[in-house]
Image (cartoon, rainbow, N blue to C red; front, side):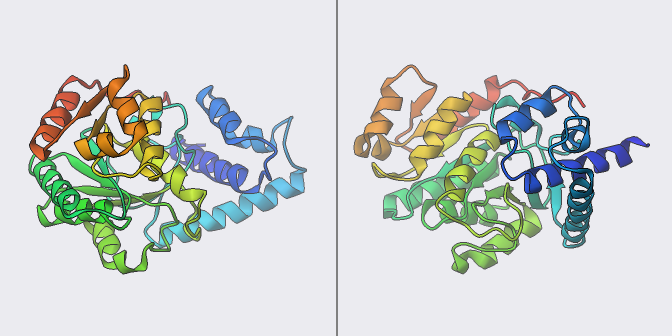
Length: 299
């Protein structure tokens, strides 16, 4: 079997394993097995198979049909077995086993996530827009989550400046949340990249959005939190960045308004407090200057 055919067969098996295993093997277990060189098809259908042979064939047939449908819709289906899976994801322990993308897939080694509260201030909005514009002008990819407030401000500023922007979604690619951001989502899909770890038909939920934040942290070289409250969902991404060993940039507002912001800023973490967009840019460029190329998975 040629390498391309083998990769496709493994991709189909991994999709079947993830969608049809009914929790018989956890995602971390599957991830560890794949990193150790195990075959997804062997996990699914080998001597210690999780299912009877007839169930395996049904799962493989269904996943092959799903893959063909998604590809016909212009959706990239990326797994760690593929050459175009974003290489920087391998430098974290909890990278997703499948990513669905629409747009241009790149590794985006030079990238910064800009996130913050949905209930933003004028100052926060100005900070996000100015920083995204500065990053776009220097060829640094702006990553965010298409949410109301800081996220959509960063995306739109990057687009206006002609920069690359990547949106990591908390729902599948077939949906838009919030609905009023559909036009921006479609534009990003044309000129940037939409990414989701969820099957295209998946709707967003209280479970999917926090998972999205962890994936955004993994994808980005660092995270900038522009504005937040104590119970803000952005704290999930802040903690993910710390756990991933990714640098974190906080504004003074985040440090002043949240105990977790103060804790991260005063701890022994790679955290910079940047009162202005210019200072945030300097911190980001410093991080990128010292960053090594991300780890890659031997294929």
